[in-house]
Image (cartoon, rainbow, N blue to C red; front, side):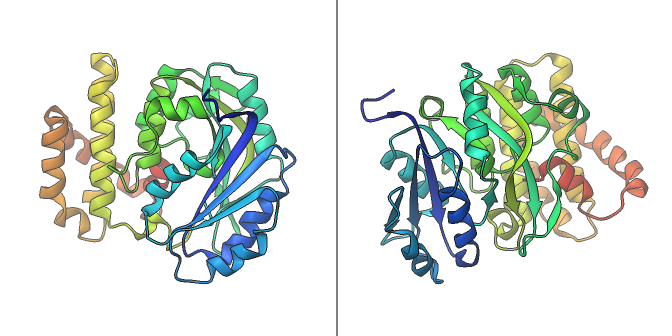
Length: 331
């Protein structure tokens, strides 16, 4: 712990950008947390709506520090700026369009303090739409092994967490995750090499060094709308990042030969979902994504024919174009 770090303090970092309509609920859900040893650092990244006007209502609050940037730094840059400016022993990135239960930080911190080997503690997330209507939760679509292990609060060891992350981003929303500062710093923080998968990449790097604690209660509210980073990113870029990340991790992690085949087939199956979509975007991006596979794990391409066959077999059983996408990448 550095000299400036304050023991027990939770630094809440809010990267604000063009979500004025959600900011009041976001700020109120943080200010009124049952755990009050917090600092709330809000950095507005040159919003063009009335976000700054909304934030000014909170600038007199003793726990709130508002910074208005003069130049756009992007979500990753702003988030890392927040870490550099903060002094808490623990860090949480509270996305400006999300909200949370008033007990969330308290519960996450309890889980962290109860598990000394954990670098992250996170909770289940409720999915809500633009109007706050409940869409579901992120737990129901997870693989069976995750649901069996995490039906109650539990500690996921480093090795198991890496395998869960290979299957899907089981921490679908950064707003639901509390970090030890030392784990965040040791892993190197968020990287600008990814636009969509920067958080997923960070989770892999922390899971290589620390265990992860899970709180089964749905304490976070993860908003789904058309202007999220994920929703506004073209399919080709999104799949390129996903495949680059997962194939790279298959190469890095100490997996058995059978596991390598399993996860390569899994990644190729996810690609087959994209290829066989009703739209032509999967076909149009085929050559581009093929080059990504050949660059990062050329052996994986051998699994593509089987993945395509499995996808075709399962198509009649799938209702709705996005069901498998949500199952694997609901984040």
